Length: 282
Image (cartoon, rainbow, N blue to C red; front, top):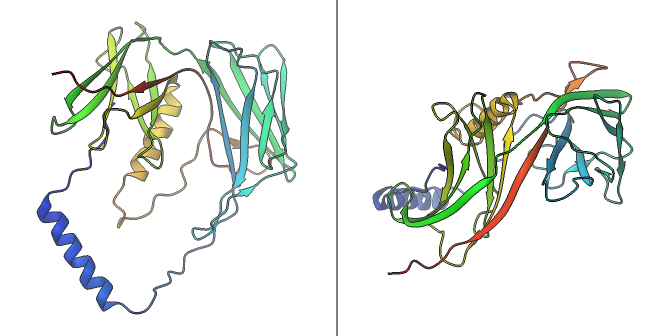
């Protein structure tokens, strides 16, 4: 997995600290930026993940509202109707739990390559989305090295898998580790590697022996791959550039198309595993 390393030369660091100190000592007033208010748009977090070591019957979907920049709490959406259907006409109902905005299904029936349709009704509006459950290759092996990363000085963990031949495939991996506040996401496709063994790696200058990585790897649709590409590009964009517009997913408002929801309905078979970095033997 190729993540951008945290690279700063000493000159850049010292210059930045010096400029920051001048800025702090020269400013006395708090600058309040008048930002536009959010439009209270619905946000649907609907990822159905099936670890085939389990039945996959318990699934959750989360509903919230887009909030203003300075808000510290997310507005959860209660009293919604949420369900998923498949091509056989089966209906899987998601019932709101004791936690507002969290809807759970206890009898979901995942089936590879099956097509599912999501329905969400809230405030007299109906939102729908359609996606198929994508199969994910098995992990062949996991390796580590101590000379990975951009400069060849970091610990690096790599896992390998066989890409299915004669079809286009797209993949999403996220890695959680204690020293990172949020998961690191990486997307890839089998362009130039169709039908061959592929790999995904993670390295970081702070990664040390004893650190445990929690990794989730899944195959995704081409459309979701494009969506995630835009998401990742926007989050790593120049902070002084023009803020990106809201990125639309595959969710459609059947009642009022202009009042679209944010989020993407997706389904994948998932390969979840942990790996603890080991001390290199001399």
